[in-house]
Length: 378
Ligand code: SF4
Image (cartoon, rainbow, N blue to C red; front, side):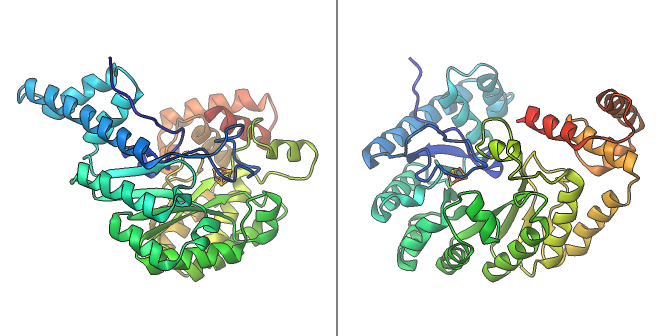
């Protein structure tokens, strides 16, 4: 029988090759209108003993994979064996460990939505056990809520950092209180700022998430400007953007039907992103590593790359209406990765055929077409 351990449903895109260790189940808040990751599931803190058992199981799986690698001889080595394992893994646990090993075996992500809610001593104990079991591990990260960070003393965060916690991912989402309130985020901008500053002070690397389009059409400008302002007060190591995607499963879809929330279009979101970047006065890495983003090439170190990022936005905004429509369709059906791809004449022609079909004879691209393409993508 294949060994297995518990794995939660999500992790940040930057943790795609990380080992996933579930320390809590689901989300203790679970009320944000734009999120359906854990809806209908109740929150639980797993016991330290249960988590340690999972870590020991992972060690057995790791040893099994290394053993197969050794027995396979030198030709192909680890990559070959992991390739075989990934093609037909006995279970998801095996696949996660194999992916982790091929990614270097150094990064670990603690699931689910808010691991920091564990007692500091318990979480510290888990991290120490993990690091003792896998001495090669260098990066240990987790999601956390600002409200929970506020309940910890800086000394506790320092304690966790010393145990081996290297990075926290926080969903700030917006720096404008009416948006946070409407979205039932359960946190204020002030809490986000104070929690962020506390994490930075503790020495733990901080990654702040922002959702482009979260203010809809109505608050687009305020969302971009005030979110930048809040981040300026924190100066996190990473600012990560993702774009709002609404499917029928998120509670926000009801506000769209009732007319309480009007979605911003891709073009409006690009303008929002421009205002956001223009207003940032930080020393952060700007990252667009989420598939929902129209322009994933918007990445760089601030402030030095600010003009480079704005030049990418200029390039999109300077396109004709028809070329913008071509790019948006191409990107949303997965034929384009970056703006550069529009210059590939074959792909451009193929996208043009899809665009014409989707527009059904209309001259302009209806934003609802893009919204439904985005929903299909997720
Ligand atoms: S705190 Fe995070 S995981 Fe929980 S409901 Fe909000 S967005 Fe979803």
